Length: 129
Image 1 (tube, rainbow, N blue to C red):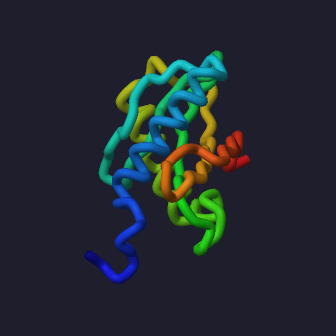
Image 2: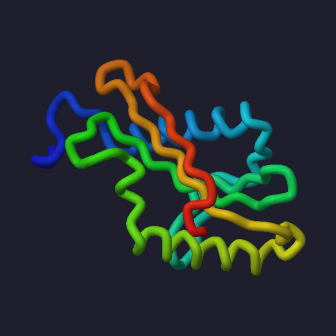
Image 3: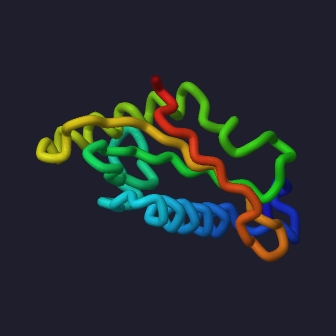
């Protein structure tokens, strides 16, 4: 077990998985259509590719159980955004039929560290404009 992970903290992959499922459920409740999850390319991964009306939306999901290192949305650095943009451009090359309007959103989620229930969900729309 790493020093960064205490006995009571959940594995990072479990936290990420719970957060991505919560984000997908939230987006569906807002009438988004999920096209793909965990799209991987050379530059990185896009957690969720969705459609909001005619807009193709690339969603970066950040999930935390503690605010010790800041809120989850603060972990979306300029470098991470650059990777998401490059991966989104590659996705569009592969799927030119899905190319009208595009944007990048962030869904930031805080989970209860014991129950893993969502305690806060923040949806930041069009973070690159």
